Length: 368
Ligand code: OSB
Ligand code: MG
Image (cartoon, rainbow, N blue to C red; front, side, top):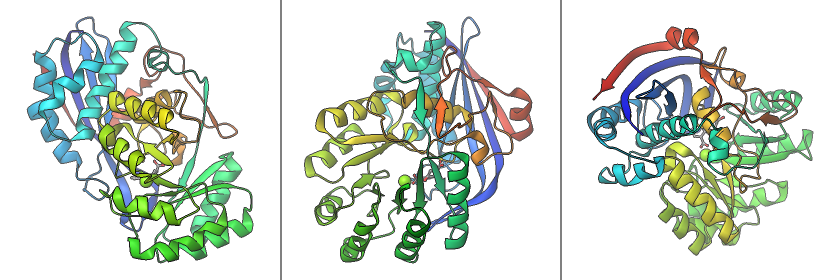
């Protein structure tokens, strides 16, 4: 593959409604849209999913841009790779910075599939024509969270996640269960608890939650294994799993029964697929996480979710969940809780250049 140009578009869009966790509130989303262009003019698309500030992981839009511009893009432009798998070796001289790596790696996979004139999901070995969607409520208020759950449920979402913390957990889950006794419901704590809260968390066992995501420390694997032993509710790890090695440790220790796989958090498809394969072999279930992302990342999440092991609905919602208008066409739509996987080459969606331009703060071009 000869990649002779890379474009970065830094974009910013207002969310329709602010999204809150116990860590803070996202009102506007910045992101980086990546285009890698080959010698015949074909374009692969990726998206940098770091936030403006390091509230979720250590990376930010600023650190991603720095690592991409100063290190990763020069490496990519001067290399000659024949397959996107080779990027993990090419980028191995750079520690972590997984979201920066993933944005380029995913763009190269898209380009590679377009060169083959095949949908990316088929190139990856996926076998699902339709994937199950899932929505996440993000309000600090119980009333408003319940309203959001009503809205999602009316739109056809069959699996709904809510954010919890010690301040709202029991009351929130109890009130939702009262109105939705049979809903596939799960809770994400984004590391709001410590092991001392084990007895408190046991109180959630009676509500039939599908799982509780990342209750303990963002880089903890060991204490989650102690907690999982105490809880009936399945533990799912998100923040703690940034590599294949992390997944191996979590499985060996029995720290979780689910792993939320995010392309950005693990550095792209190579590691995402390796974690998926390992989990299947070891009987740990996986699903695809979300990052309040724009359409390019949504399209990649859809491609990833066609792999056999992604049999639990992920945090993949329609473009209209967060955006008045997305930057891709066609936008992602959810019908009866499902998303149809596009069949065009690569990720199967195009950039909506008019919309992209409206929300672009800065575009930079790098070439050989
Ligand atoms: O912890 O899964 C998370 C959004 C931003 C950062 C972290 C997380 C989330 C979500 C997914 O919960 C929300 C979505 O993309 O719909
Ligand atoms: Mg999470």
